[in-house]
Length: 185
Image 1 (cartoon, rainbow, N blue to C red):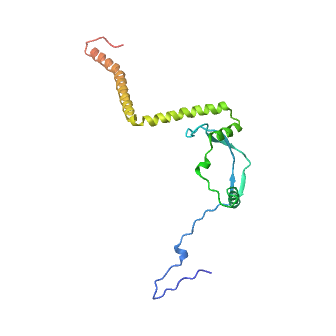
Image 2 (image 1 turned 90 degrees about the horizontal axis):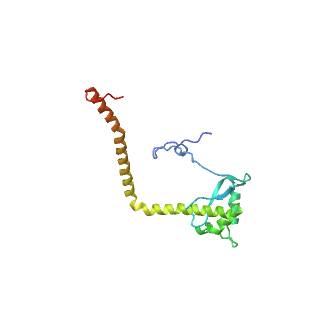
Image 3 (image 1 turned 45 degrees about the horizontal axis):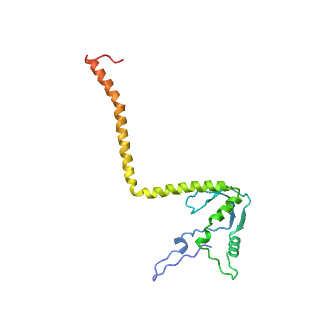
């Protein structure tokens, strides 16, 4: 049956049905999720405070964890609740892996102490370059101006050398045409 249409009355202005005026509401929902486990590799992030950094590789374990969102949320609630039933509050410092923890993870995945030492050395080089860049920022504009002047001078000298022989050839040809010199061969 079609929806009832309002009957206009003399005391109230006519109104349209609300179904016509309102747009359908868009809705997003999730039902299932999959969690993949990726390989842990020796990272190259120089922001690591000390020791080697961890990274995530491209390879992953083909067997993955599948569950509904409700099952996953229930699992997380059990995992992160205290014995008294209170919710466990995760602080930012709880998410930090200390140097010895990162080293243990990397050693367990097959890296050698030499690999870790080489990585730390290269990270320290990058950190020193960043530190030097930050230290040189106040005078960077002077270096940039000097580079511009240097490029301009080089271009000017190159142009002078490049066109000088053309002038000399023209002058010799002009002298020959006017009877003042030897013909150019």
